[in-house]
Image (cartoon, rainbow, N blue to C red):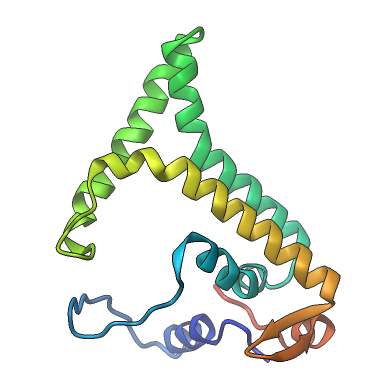
Length: 167
């Protein structure tokens, strides 16, 4: 009854005292997780509310934090360049850090490191899509009274009874 069994397995491995590592294996294994942005949103519908252990309060906090952390630096830059200079430097530092992350991880992109710092301009749209996926995951799970996964319905009551911690 674990909807995000991969995360749960990772938690159990860490709890047992084992270490985890991240490695890249470009061109060794290829898995298509989703087709396009709406495919990602659809796939996240099952996972996101489960990642917050089906707790509405945690989910609302997660949605708010994601919106603030991902969108405020862009809005702050606009405000800082416009009418409120107090927003300029904090927003510029945040966006510079994000640009550095894009620059650092461009070599892991497919095909052959195509990620550029210009993709930073798409970040607000991606953040909005993720917030939408978070809200969608919560609302659909609550309205349906559970999660539909690979054609099987898992009742929310049972999922909540069997949910384990992910720390």
